[in-house]
Image 1: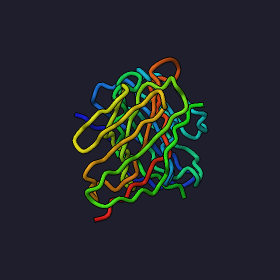
Image 2: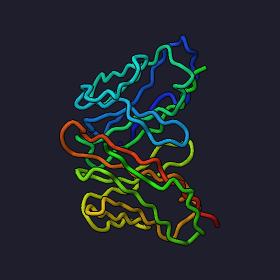
Image 3: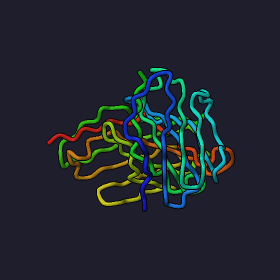
Image 4: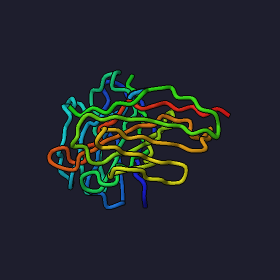
Length: 113
Length: 114
């Protein structure tokens, strides 16, 4: 299995809603990432988990809460988002220290209304 | 400051031509270099990576790295309309707190016309 699976593919949520994005990989990768990408911009790093521990938080607002229940799963919990948070949210995984590059999931297209 | 610079384009080439995409980076500590292809509305797809100075070929793609000049490029031979996409250059550092973090350029939009 050489894929990173993200669900849902599309999500529309109101500013008072709570939702979660899910990511799963079975490649034995020990680093997992959340990126945010706005239209015509490069991906922006949000969080890095290494060996199931949060190692990097790029000063992301607390309305985004990551969770890594085990080495194969990564969640992003969303609460009280703003319309400007609408973007493509990408999960990625890699071998330790990014060797060989990332494998990205297909992304979740999030719209906040 | 770890900066990755790409010409945003758009770069337009005819079918069958060679497309040349360029990328420069600011930090001499950079260790690994990646090219991702991203179709509109889709996620990035890794197409090439290179660690050592010189050329690396994979099918129609050739990555070239010159660490002295802090320059990495991607050549696409026999370009096809299906190569039309945004190409992202990314750089990583394999030590310390950077922990495999990728630094992305802004991407170059390539259009291959029939």
